[in-house]
Image (cartoon, rainbow, N blue to C red; front, top):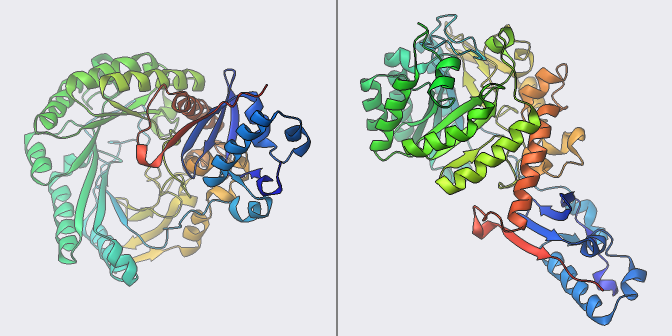
Length: 479
């Protein structure tokens, strides 16, 4: 091999075998490639000049062309560049708060068998004395941003979450949203509001959602029987018919509507039926997540689905969704996206206000009695003084949970998208260690992402973003 082509594989690039095939994945360029064993040997050891010189002229030319192609896109690099380019240059946008989340109430009209927050077991509703100082701080942070930051920002986001069902405190909910939108417009920013809901609200709430362009994500665990079994009304009666009616009402207005289905060992077999149901109802997205054994779930007979079985069923649903024009999603499905420095905003970026006035970065950590509060509670609102007190040391600690600090993930092919997976599940699984990912979720993500990469490389599925994705074949034939 000529000296100018003495290259090495970029450390960010992963190569793996799957079902007899060999595949390459580059997260930076979103390159998905299939290759044979001969090309694999060359790509992983392109400096092996002796073996290269033993090849025929045609084979040397073919491999030289491959090397040049991979060098152009940064998959093969010069050895002296390895130290500089082995790490991903991921922008750190954690300096300012750009997203506000408010948990309106712990009240709930359902009694879900697995509720992480024991929704409805207490009845606390956030007061103006708590949410208003939080909003004051949020908008003052935006105003204090750099000139460039303000110039680049066009909108601000408010998320409404549960811990209960936000629509049961409709007057408070409307007041919070109205104030947020008014403040945003006053500083020239476009407000957007999203709300997680159990979908059992009444017609007046539906009209408000439409009139105020609220984006909603509705929880529906599947067909009627499983929904009513896992998510009954607090009275014990059926919730399915109400949720279906509200979903249909949203679709009829032209909304793109998504649902979130929590999957237990029991409901695993209904996942495909859930896709069929989504198609019938005109929904656009189904988000599947395996149940987390925390909260109320920890005291019931519910169990997580087997990791391998969940992954296999998810992949079947993914293909079914493509046929039915339904987007099928799982939070660990990361191979289609770009770089992630952090798995989610719980790593020091989220600013979520609970009814008690606690500030948490994790949507699953709302109770001060939760052991995870010691990591994810980053402050407190004093309703008497109208002040927000933040624990900057704890925020800084959470911000350190980034890809490059996750030693347990250093050899993982999806590390630059997954970034260590869910931090609170790491905490709960590993005796409070944020840096040791939950192996259950790792098993799912490994299976799901590898199969999706294989399907892309082999042409079974099409790239979701053609302009930012490359699918190539490196099956060079060596005699």
